[in-house]
Amino acid sequence: MNIDMIKNKNYWFSSGYLITFYAAWSLWWSFYAIWLKSKIGLSGEQLGVVYAANSAAAMFFMIFYGIIQDKLQIGKAVVTFQSIMMILIGPFLIYVYEPLLRQDFILGVCIGAPVLSAGFISGSALIDSFIERISRLCNFEFGPARFWGSFGYAAATFVAGISFGIDPHINFWLASGVAAIYFIINLFFKPTQKLSVSNNTQQIIVPKPNIPTISEIFSLFALRKFWLFVVFIIGTFSFYTIYDQQLFPNFYTSFFEKEETGYKIYGYLNSFQVFLEASCMIIAPYFINKLGAKKSLLVAALVMICRIGLSASLDNVYLVSLVKLFHAIEIPLFILAMFKYIVANFDARLSATLYLVGFNISSNLGVIVLSKPVGKLFDNHGYSSTFYILASIVLIISCIAIFTLSDNKQANNQ
Image (cartoon, rainbow, N blue to C red; front, side, top):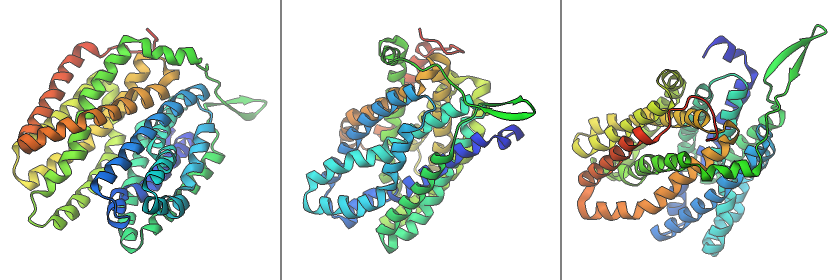
């Protein structure tokens, strides 16, 4: 963090957005599955229905948010709508969602999915893309600002763990309270690009970017390199997400004789990993700026391959714990390099659409389509063989990406 960034009020407002959003999200989301199963009493099949519905609603809002935000550029209308939905999370979960899930499960799922997605599940991609655009216009690195998001999530997870044991409703009210702070930040924040001096007074100049047309936004889907980018995302990040979320937690806890001990240690390790991830958010931009976006994405994929492959070959819980921390390197490197790649190889005005559609929806679709086949692969062959196969697939896609990802250094629309 240089002195110019520290003096840049846009950086601090942006950091305020991120720390409050991710803290509010963590307060209810980090124990969402546990709440649904242990407190509401949903079965495993019902949990699957809830998550599938949430993912479907999230994809809709990602498309909506991406296209509208690209039209608004630094306009705050969509973020304001999102902030209102965030404030409603506490009373909604307590007085609407919970009773409906108990009394009319399908109706609860149908009503809950769009509300949760509008405020948080899709909102995370919206706020990341919004702040990344602000960082480019207002001369600061996105990584150091995103650090505060990871820090907020990790810190709130500690609080959530304590309050959840007392009463989950405390978490929900805390989430709404932090969301109110997010709303206030959004209310007062006015992005400014530079200061000009006129008649011995400083006048704030608000940037007026060239707004893309709807046809320009949809023209992305006709670009060959857009689809090559999507293939890379699905072939690397989607498989890695399945490994990290669907397989690794149970794999890790299998090292412990008592499941409760495994869950507790995994929770501690996960919190430490998020704090480490936050620190890497500050360091990663300097690495990416020197190496370039394409090479940084490939290095991030190499970290994925190493983590998956080593998990297949290690049988020591301490070494497996160390490998788990690779995630703190991979995520900042991949996410930040992806933004750099988007700006360098596509029209920068369309960054929200590219991030929400090109990355988030592609990776989510990949997870939805690939989860069941990977699950069957595990049922038939176990952890080790499944991990080796996943690592091999990511390696093959990464090797192909050496030739298919673009090296362009400036935004263009070809």
